Image (cartoon, rainbow, N blue to C red):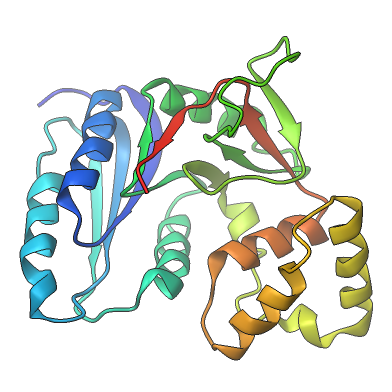
Length: 238
């Protein structure tokens, strides 16, 4: 058994797409993190079972020394709230973690980049997360390896328990007049998507924890910043 190379936990979310997952997992195998969290949603019907089994065969190919945790659901929760469930689960056991979905293929350098940033900014409450995806591929005019931004992509990211513990799964801020005034102003100031508050209302009505709106709301309320690499580190397969 090979030793681990990067002392950082990694959470992988997957369902029934072994071809995409195998590309992600191959990069994780190359990086050899010290801890691995594997979350798989349950079947919608018997037609999902072959893909589910094939995905588990992919993630069984652990050939390095690491601590492994598995949450394989027996029922189907869907993308939401599976995202929220899996992330709260992983961050309940570790103080920092990298999060990858089954279509987020990272470069191997993404893992060491996250490790460095997670350690460096662990005690800095201004920093909310580390993104791996840069939609510009290479951001011009930035003479450093990374920069700070007020918005972020969730295609491959890392964060800390201190951030995830702030998430409001019940969207209680929607019921507070002062909070809503703040949120409306923050959305305008940060030039955030105009339908964000509408999306929060819709997600609350659906009675599901949609982690993407929960995450962004938490970041806005806490004036958080994301670290974005100057060079893109994630290939999203879709």
